[in-house]
Image (cartoon, rainbow, N blue to C red; front, top):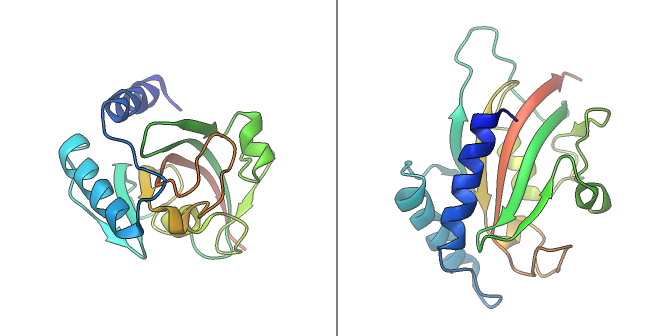
Length: 170
């Protein structure tokens, strides 16, 4: 990710550190309210929710050559992931991503819509295109659910800052 994008994500991390964290007994509805408050108050963006995933575009390709991500496509990503409570738990360049099957190093392509990704990431990617960057936010029911995965506690609402670097049509 570019230096300015990393700086922006760092600002998001800092803000989250000052935001009340989601408790393990949070319900999906409470997490949705927390996510909407975060989008409105912290990101100063409009709440845009579809299929349970909240989408905040950081860059959009509006050219006629836009290569949209569709079900079955293979994508290569750069991303950073954390809980809504501010726990940074993975990037596309670290070993945790590999361990928890979300490795997106340049040599690895992920099939969108195959069920191999967590549901929130899978659904959010379907709103993106090659070269676009967005923040995807979703409740624990579309993330790791009741499981404690790596540094992400169980029932964690998740935030992914995602850049789609390649889209291979199938």
